[in-house]
Amino acid sequence: MRIAVCPGSYDPITNGHVNIIERSARLFDKIIVLVSVNTSKQTLFSVEERAELVCLATRHIPNVEVDAFSGLLSEYARSKHAMALVKGLRATSDFEYEFQMAQINKSLNPKLETLLINSDARYTYISSSVMKELARMGGAFHDFVPKEVEKRLLERLAEQEGPPAQKGVVHLARTG
Ligand code: PNS
Image 1 (tube, rainbow, N blue to C red):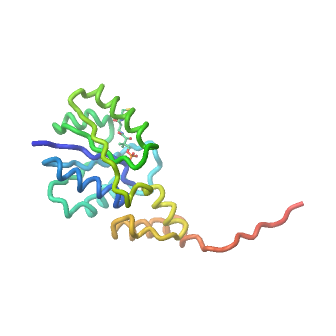
Image 2 (image 1 turned 90 degrees about the vertical axis):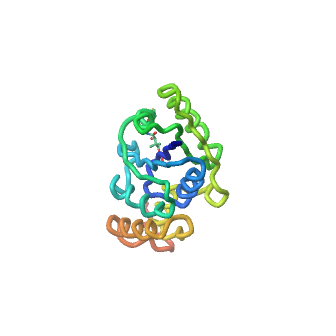
Image 3 (image 1 turned 30 degrees about the vertical axis):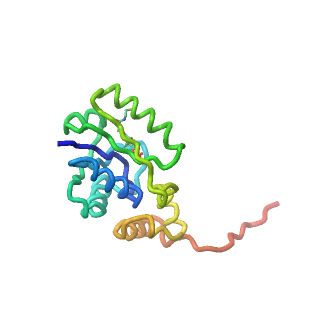
C-alpha cells in the first residue's frame, strides 16, 4: 500500500490545504494528514481542535486518516510505513524552507521522498496566518476556508478579542 503523510500545523486548515490533500489522495492509497502537536508557533486552536477541523474538512475524501504527532516527522513516517511526505508549495518563498526540510528528512530516513505540489492558482496567496488576520480585521475570508472553520475561527476570536475591528479612522491624541 502506498502511504503518504501530509504534515502541518493546520491552525486552522484552509481550502488550500484541502486542495493539496484531495490531489495527494488521488496519487496514493492512503493519506495521513498529520497535525503537528509541538509546533514552534503559538497556535490559536489546540491540537484536538485542529485535528477535529481537519477531520470535518476532509470527510469527503475516503482514503484520508487524521493523526497528531510530536517529534520527528521522518520517524513518524517510518513507523507508518509511509513512502512520502507531501507539502504544498505556494510560491518560491516557500521553496527554500521546504527544500531544506526535504533534505533533512531524506538524510534521517533515506527511503522517504518529499513531494512538493504546486498550490492551485486560487490559493497561492492564502495561509492560515492570513485567514486569522482577515478574521481579526473583519475582512471576507469565507471563500478560502471550509464552512466549519469560518464559524470556529470567528467564535474563537470573539471569545479572545471581542467583535472584529470596526472600519474607520483611529483618532490619536495630540501630544506636545
Ligand atoms: O504547517 P507548517 O507550520 O508549515 O508545518 C510545519 C511542520 C509541522 C511540517 C514542521 O514543523 C515539521 O516537520 N515538524 C516536525 C519536526 C521535524 O521532523 N522537523 C524536521 C527536522 S529538523
